[in-house]
Amino acid sequence: MGQPDDTTTMPMRATRSGVSRKMLTRKALNQRLPDGEPLEASFPSAKNVTTEQSADPFSAPTSAPATALAQQPLVQAEWLSEDETAFQTLLARRKAAGYQRRGRDLSDQVLKPGEIKPNPDTIVATIVALVTERGELMRCELLTAMATATFPHPRAKPADASWCQGYVAGAIRNGFLAVAPPPPVDAEQEG
Image (cartoon, rainbow, N blue to C red; front, side):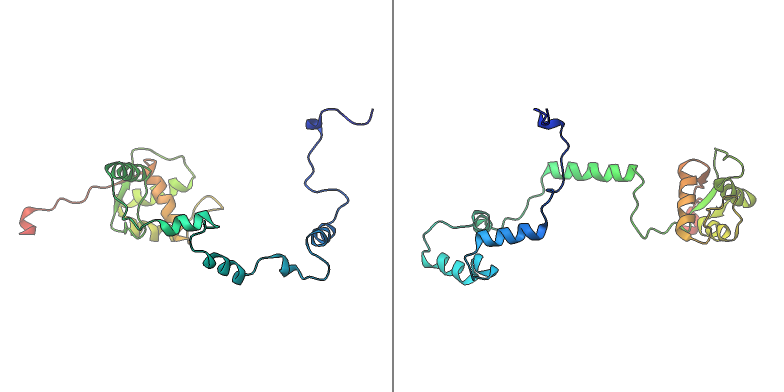
């Protein structure tokens, strides 16, 4: 009546009930060590291992992975066409995902209002309003203006430059702001 036949229905326990870690450690030490020897005596010493290996140089090595590493000659890895293809695919994916290297200076980027109008009384609406007031605005000027602007959301962090950069990037990515094309360079000015 008491025991079920199927043990899969019984829940698993993380620990053995009624047995402490201290008692298990003591039992293991008593079973392993002869009376009076310290715990360190149950481990082989480094001197014994090296003398056994060096005594017979033609014997089979005791550690197969260690000898496999020691026997491999150093070979220069070749860059195959498949590697180049995989690398170019990775670069294309990162570029499509918007990955940019750190340190890229976008402060000279000129921004203008985008095609999409944001919802009123949002953080993005405030950012777009700052750009719309001036027509076109450099990104560094926009970040400075955002630091002093009043935002409708209580979690806005206009004093945090990273927060401002993130919102400007999101506004560009979502079409609320657009990057203005650079002014045309005349051939007369270059020469």
